[in-house]
Length: 129
Image 1: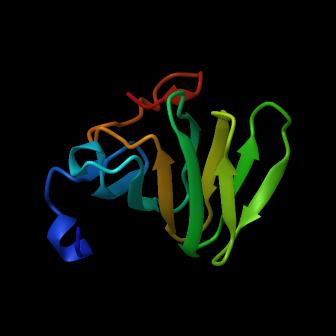
Image 2: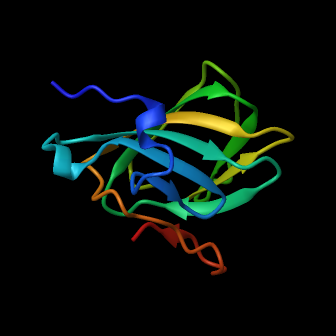
């Protein structure tokens, strides 16, 4: 059984600055599970052009307000507490946090190594590496 608290993760090597926020990684590949669970903060007022090419990602909003836009179709969806979205086809997308930080609980399959970040300086989407 694995039991962890956010207090145990903050400030450790599982607390990753990913570009426009923090990803607190509760479960990673080293834990021996086939998926990862993160508590992710997206900084207020930021937009990030993202894509995971090796992971399916599902996010559930627990705080804040923002938007996710499918880069391929241009369709944008509001994200508020109680909203879930799944990037089920390795979708390139733009994630925006509005006036307050957006807080998401995210599940990745297969599991993350744990040290993945994004390069947000490119004009193309950032693939986690």
